[in-house]
Image 1 (cartoon, rainbow, N blue to C red):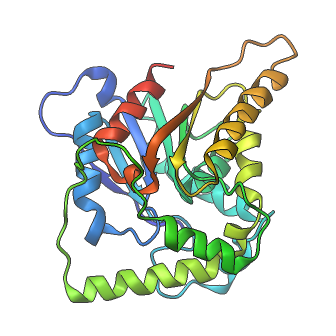
Image 2: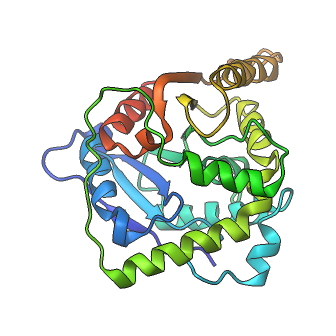
Length: 282
């Protein structure tokens, strides 16, 4: 059953263009309202957009039901993603002219799969932004995939940009809940993490020529080496070009490479705001 969305709204004067924009932003690994509310409020403030936070399937719970566990495997993810896409449409009720799917880290696969579904005959998002969310080392052993996530999740790279991700104090019970949910998510999603599903949905999304799409690879991220990251962006651009051979003018696909960034830089709302602006301007 899809998780209820939590709305984060910007304060102050917001341009009409931004007020008509909603960002679907699933919590990243171990994220929840106890440790992420301040950051999601900051994202809304920095971007001027309404942000919808939610848990992706197989996250946010200490125990994940068996039906969800069976669906979180390569080849079956799209069924769950289609359910969530339909739920997103009901939650937004057609009120927003611009609907952005934001997939950071492991949620890139989830958001891309949502966009590839057509629950009511059309796509849930008008624009998609994915960042450092493809495993370029896959397929690999599950223990290596888990190690990759745990070791690399806090990398910051070499950027001198001041950290603006707001701190949020949480109690001991919330901290324990967060830790148990993080472990549960890793266990339930380990096969998906180790598979090439993330690569496949990114490439499939690149072939969906009607979707303005921006993919961000990092010089010090989780996806793979700097060389592989840049090569993958080139591959996405080729896929979009080849898919448009029929003469239809494709929507813009913008491959971005942030050489100085590490995975932890994704948590910075100010840096994210720059990417959102680029995406809206496509």
